[in-house]
Image (cartoon, rainbow, N blue to C red):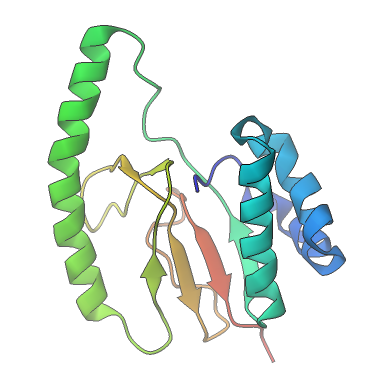
Length: 160
């Protein structure tokens, strides 16, 4: 799954869609992610609704593209060289992050998109996947990226 172009400013509309079910979430996501196709939208909508049904508060989705897509043959070669080099750096950063994870936070990724990782934990990355950050404290502060470099789904426990 790639996580793209759904901004935190859309949070209220997104939460309303979540409360209305999978088809409402799919319709909400289609404007920004429609190019990924119906099956992709179906899978993402179901995943987000499953988290919602499990009592996990989905507080926002955002994505920042690291670079423009390479167009020429040389740009594609340079892109792949950079991506391969950054994957090693990302693995090291992810290992450090995993060792720091406490009971209220976990991070997962998978899929075919690209995200850029933390300014504090490594270079801008083009590794495949989404990042989901779980924060059960209700503060919504469990993030891989800082305030100006979002590229993840933040899932936070509901405030009491």
